[in-house]
Length: 340
Image (cartoon, rainbow, N blue to C red; front, side, top):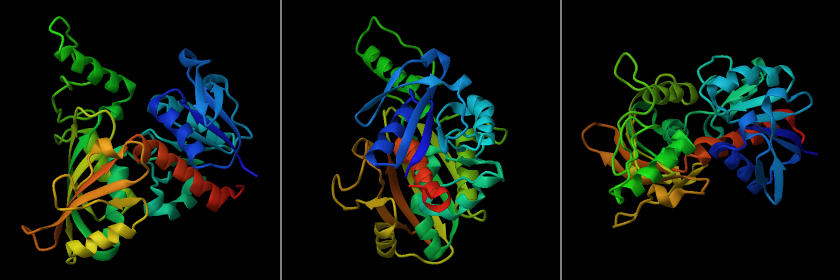
């Protein structure tokens, strides 16, 4: 016996990826429906070898459906998530709306699976920010061994994190560079993204941080440990898919790089590719379409007593969004609903 599942926002990058992953992982679905806004109504999307036609999110009745995977942004989620939750359908939300709500669990299944028990307070579960999700998968097993005091992270985030519009802008600007009669001014991003990097993701806050950087701080504390200090610099780079991060960690206890490498090799959701030779690491283009979070360039930081550096790469449309949401759905089914 399987589940009745809704995917809301099925025509977007993340929604389509959710459908791909549900099919790939053979999630126990008895019935699946796909929802979209009225402007995308009737659009066809693929689910395995099936073609589904989107229905109207605005008029959909969530009664009798087990779970809904939301990829519709915060504004629409604010309207529709409480409706679905009230109807008895558990919402797994990919937006930032509920991540910081103390009554809504924020879950990365490899890290804090037990938090799933808190879903019943609002019938909503939050999916973390893409840059946070991949980092905490690597941090948690190291924290369990040597206790993390502080994390300094610099991100190199792909344009797909800004949706289809971001990918289109990189594509159009790249073509324009080679066409002297063409000009594609910035629209989705603050400056030209083609052949450039932009040290701003989301809006600036009063302390000079961007909201993306703030998200990494507060989400890491909520998911892993509130005592961990985090500082982040988040940068948009001209890469279509795949987020990369340079991570520096300071521990309470000494952790040898070889032991850290062994710990990460055994960690769920992590793949270590770390050869000290040209090309012996993973770059974003190599992680596309993969489930794993890849860790490379593990090495001691000799400037502090208990420091470690590593390079972290993951497909942001998968582990950073759709895959993590499906993993939450699996966790919900296995631990709570128990139908499949």
